[in-house]
Length: 463
Image (cartoon, rainbow, N blue to C red; front, side):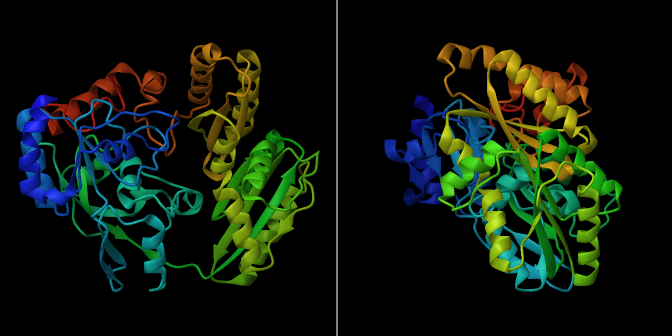
């Protein structure tokens, strides 16, 4: 893009020469995220610090029809931050301040470059709780969580990112700076632009500030690990727990291969029994240990109706942390074992046994191994398709057909093709499995209103 090179000096005037990057090494760092092995090089990386600076950049890019890809920490799993058309990477790294924690109104104002875990820990010091906690919470940015409406293990009880956002400051692709709502718990004033922006994957605007609602921090929890003779039994137990009147704060599913590879990855001294094919990690939380113990006893009763092995209850904070470390590193363990493709399906939780059974049948039909884990409590199952000994040709053709069948099954079970990772770049070939032409055209129309020249995060979500 020769025109872009001519604009470098103007970018330097806006944000300072030291925040404009064009060297090959710098561009390489921003050419990929955590999505498989894809790479697309930008032509320049910009690191602004204020909404006004971003506004000036967007005006310049919009006038000259330069593509702009917003980027957070680069932990995305659907290619949402890949600069597939080159152009500008707009890095939000310098937007890294927690601006205010309002303990009177239980709110916090945060910039999008704040690491999720850092935010959680800061509000916890005030006895407050921000529940969304994706597995990458130690490195992912709040802005990325907003872009995908991230969930994580606590979503089953507390909801996902969109459930905690009151208001956003956003720079539009044309340069205007707007607030999408108000810092209030109820708002019936016009269309809900806040919720429209959340989950839009950086295609409608660039968030520069977010106001979150917070809740009181639970002070006590119980964590248990339950092994099952089969994945279908483990999945069937999920709905049974809820039917018994229990709402866990987390209910995570892990197949045996996923656990074994994670144990190896972490170098843990831990053995799984041959007859245990899947595990559920179950947590209940609150402020009254007597009530939590009653809940745990009820869960024991429910699980006893299934083919369950010896249930481990963590006795200490260290044991709880060890179990959660295991779960949060499953994706890393699987990735370290083989080349893979990761899918992010979600169905009503009572349909999980049918989903897991169908996944294995499709794998047999198309000749691939799958390893599954995820947030079973809200029906969100992550499917890792393992390349193993598959030929490159089968990996590029046969497996793709198998993925289509996985998504068709998911939709047939009243589910959809992404629960929290987004559509981004890699899932867009499948979006018409989940959405019809009318729905897609409405979304394209919304995109056109916000971004008339189509410069912001191009080639994402739909063609």
